[in-house]
Image (cartoon, rainbow, N blue to C red; front, side, top):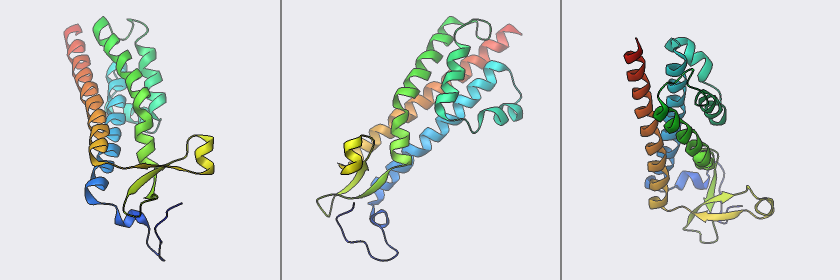
Length: 172
């Protein structure tokens, strides 16, 4: 796959530019925080103690957490505030729509493309890419945008969590 010679015990990942490596790390980290925050939302909605909530929400993947959240939005039984329900439904949709970004970088295969000085991510989702992987050049600005998109989703999740806590205090 890589075109640059790999020697024993080295790999192109050992030579990834630090700014590129940092942005890939931010993508993965923000998605980790977002996934944890979705669990916090589920705990708040279901009024579970933190320890019990973590037992139930740490481990399931993003699609499972989004499905649980979307189920909670289908009735005012758990969330009385219509605006919070609408924002949660939109957040769950947006997380699902963007979650491939997380997987693409968390489970990505990186190396050198045709140009031995160009660090790339090899794409293999499509059948034709499994035969000959497509090499997508990694650009720091593109990675920053993806990391910031994940951070934006996390900020929205944080905001909704605070609104859920506030609405529960008003009911009691």
